[in-house]
Length: 240
Image 1 (tube, rainbow, N blue to C red):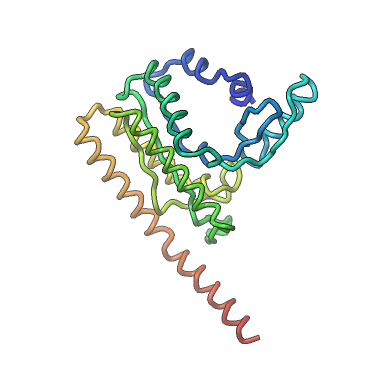
Image 2 (cartoon, rainbow, N blue to C red; image 1 turned 45 degrees about the vertical axis):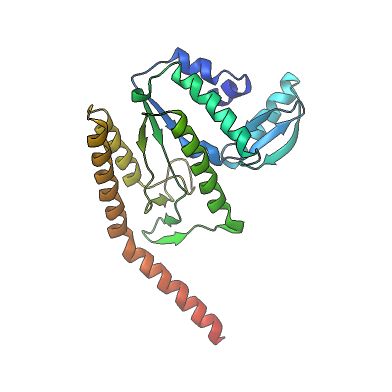
């Protein structure tokens, strides 16, 4: 609620400035969210399951705010030139508070597998290529932001990451199993060691390979079992 109120009042940058820390972590997952548009032509992030939209509607009724006129604006509704302009402006504000060596930019992609409560796995639905579209837009914004923050630290996504049905925040392709967060913590430990840029890049890549292999080793057999069960269903259906 605090984060959303900061956004409504356009005070997020002011808040960051008031809470200067040793490092600033910039997470790319927010780029995937849809927006809602209000009657005064402003856009706000919908958040998970449109919770922020409903919150705004309650505030609008109580505080006489402009009403919502479009509840579902896609994440990539702006043209690329406008995206570049906005991210450049954002990066300049960040650089006025933090030097690049104190900024950590994190890339995430949607997991395609979900770990079930019984230990098995299943695929996420990718209706209309929704997950592909989100990942593509995340990459577009991530790469533009990275170019505007030369010299910042980068934590890349794990291609083999698996989401967790028991995640405290609920089921989402970006709510991962514990190993993913341990991977990020390992990367943060490496970044804060103060290594040279080359040494850091090599160490981060070793950590990434280690966790990608760990995910593959842990979930390949489960994925194989899941694929076989799907094949059996298709075969039975053909027989009927």
